[in-house]
Image (cartoon, rainbow, N blue to C red):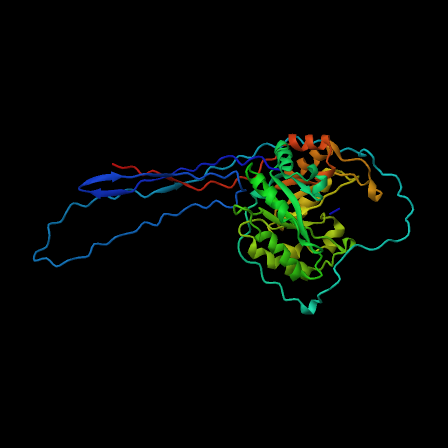
Length: 413
């Protein structure tokens, strides 16, 4: 692979006033219920309850003479649902202008290549296409996206991220106003290996209104096998029933040892979609450049995922232009939350300089203007103080699900 501001407390008061004829008088009863978004877990859905009034029909009985007609009772007017309040989006801060060139650009020429080393790891056993089942058609609605909206950070190596202290991760995320923490928990080589980490992290994060998005690294040599460890992540439960708030497979290419093919990716994702249970399935994807649009299976993923998270590592490009390219091209297929660069590329012969506050603000500003639902950065262990400050001060609130309609009280005369 080369948090959240707390959700404000939402209260909905529904008042239902049934009119009952009791000995010629109207008795009015009211019930009040409130619904609040818990700080312990990201909101997954908000559904409005529908009232199902029962109508009773009196049975006619035989009488010797017709009864004297009684005056007609006037029925109460129907309950009318008011429109739900509309969330007013916070204004987007002014977007900094582009710098040209960026500090440290262009990078110095790379050193001459050395002798070839071993290739990237990949599984030993390849399941042939002929032995793979067909991908099932996608079904069911897309999941709500509150958990992946707003700001986030990615954790790769736990020991290098706050020393592996899960409470320290939560504390740092809160100080930076994050909505979510993305943590690596599984891959094709080791399966689901981070259950103990989740047991420490998820309850602590949920206690402060932070979402935890688990991510894994499938190689697609055996898409069904990859789905098994991915499903184990989605089915994980903490000591008090906690669970992760979403899952994101990092979908890489042959440069990382991955057997990337549309049929294999589709099969893998089709096995995960039914297990989401209201949580977003997010495809971590390559940036939507001209090259990758022609050579990467974005469209094959679209029916199964709830959002894309393109890895937009701009190096010496304008970060705003790089963000605009991926957001504008991918949002026509699925919502987009962008992953920005918070690391240097000197170890691979690229730009040594870290991006810094100005570049991060431009990246987030353009992405938000273009309609991205959030932005996160790779990678926690390389973030410096300037970048943490930039992330903390940039306002990007999470998506707040719409409130259900509030019934209007009928007039009682």
